[in-house]
Length: 302
Image (cartoon, rainbow, N blue to C red; front, side, top):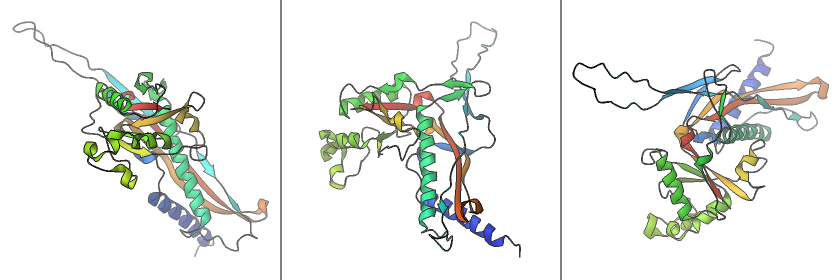
């Protein structure tokens, strides 16, 4: 038996248990991406080629030349984020073993840190740049015309109807793919106070009876409370006007792609330089990106 069998075994157990915990309790946001893939390396990776529309042209006469038409094409890329890690220490006096069963508080905290990181990457990708060009070096900012301004009000039925109209104008087929509105808690309360929404005569359900945000007007609703703990690097994107205006993400899943370099990698090591404390190391690396500017919208509320 190899001398490092016990060390190898507990590292594998630690990684597997964290991964299992992440599967059972994933982050709230990054699972909303319509597609995902695994990547490697530090360069931009191609996601897809998107082609424009072709139009038939009438022939100019009998035996005339064929109408040769070029088709527009656009390549979308994903750019890797930086590796992130967390490494809590456990002092020998605090514990006599380094158990890594599913109920371990350290294991749960490391899993929570990984889920938080991946959610953070989703929000950064939604509000950040898309990437195109021959090698993925051309930034594509969020489309300002896809923002429904707050107008000094909260979430209202006219505002939702204006959003629906905007999506249809952008050729989003809400019959085939239900858009998801990620609502701040205040916006969710405003939704529940819309008379037409809370009335069974209009939507066939009683959302106030069980508190569930039921679909309405072709939208699905998802309540999320952003804070600096849950979104350490992208929290500010959820607000505008010095925090007065709330930015509610409107997601068409096929318009978001998730790239995974490292879902989770973990190890447990003794640190002689730290009085033989045990270090639980967790690493993750991912990125999310818009694949189509006309499948990402912002609904502002106050």
